[in-house]
Amino acid sequence: MAENIYDVLMERGFIEQCTHPEEVRELLGKEKVTFYIGFDATADSLTAGHFLTIMAMMHMQRAGHRPIALLGGGTTMVGDPSGKSDMRKIMTKETIQHNADCFKNQLSRFINFDNDNAILANNADWLLDLNYVDFLREVGAHFSVNRMLNAECYKQRMEKGLTFFEFNYMIMQSYDFLKLNQMYGCQMELGGNDQWSNIIGGVELIRRKENKPAYGLTFKLLTTSEGIKMGKTMKGAVWLDPEKTSPYEFYQYWRNIEDVKVEECLGLLTFLPMDEVRRLGALEGAEINHAKEVLAYEITKIVHGEEEAKKAQEAARALFANGGKTDDMPTTTYAKADLDEGKDILTLLVETKLAPTRSEARRLVQQGGVTVNDVKVTDVYQKFTTNDMDADGALVLRKGKKAYHKVKAD
View 1 (spheres, rainbow, N blue to C red):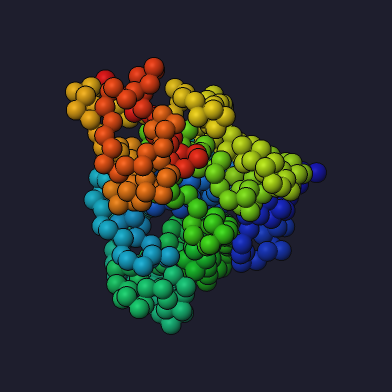
View 2: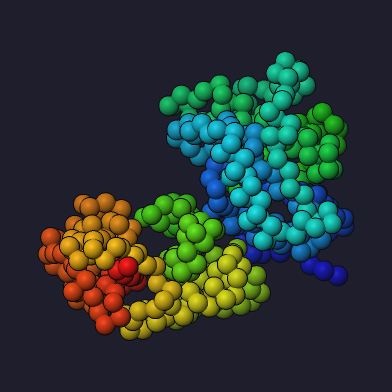
């Protein structure tokens, strides 16, 4: 008998909250369940933050269940207030559609949509042409404003002011679940823990309106030990699109996470057996670096393929071992004439994105955290030209011990 996927997700550390745990476990163990996860199309690539929910979808599909990936072509036009201190900026329909298309391509690498094994839907199909009065009568009548105002997602916004525009978001997301239930027999909504209030809204709407069972389940959010969402760097989000975050940078992000997070990430973001996850997570001292290498390699392999994962790992090892150069290092190429004239170190650090601002770059240099071709830079005004390049025609900038960037002339 195959292991119940509920137990698998629980053991691997995914499940944070569930509306009806015993019923859900029983259901997942005895029949093929159609479930959905929503993705608001706020950018043209999914992020490392989405990756945890994608992994859960992959586990569920492998266990024989049917995922619906719901693209938020309609809800993105409003914006989810959950966890946000400000209203999301309004995007055009064209931008949202472009982003949704990008999501579709990326999700297809992880989820098998062939032969009705999974469904890709877009809530623009039913939200954008709603008749407001009909919608209020059909759906709005089932929602208590008092209860909505007590929901965590709205509480955070009450101090700054919550617009009626955003107040509709929970009702829209709940309606999505109802529509997917009616169209595809979808019984479960899954999502990040910040979606709990919205998910309960949909579960209760279906149970009241359709008199049918419906369930919700949330996953833990990946955070650092300080409680900050993981998947963010000085440059911003860690993207799944290799054009936005190179496989090398993606690998390095996971290679450099905190020691205390290694076992948790191995359980959530790889398919390694849990015995191996626990063994690697128990390593201490310098040995934990081996566990981080395994973690970074396994995640990069799932997202970018085995070949890119190997290249990223070899590049990282070469750099770490001898400060050596490798073709897979992030590289910025300048016109030769620009470099002949010279670029000061602060400009180089900002333009290669090793530092977000000139003041941060200045601080790094003053603290002795910057080298160029293995020579520490002490002068914040120091300029570098093509004459300073090494035998391979490169300037290799290093920030701290692990962040490298190569500068070349064209």
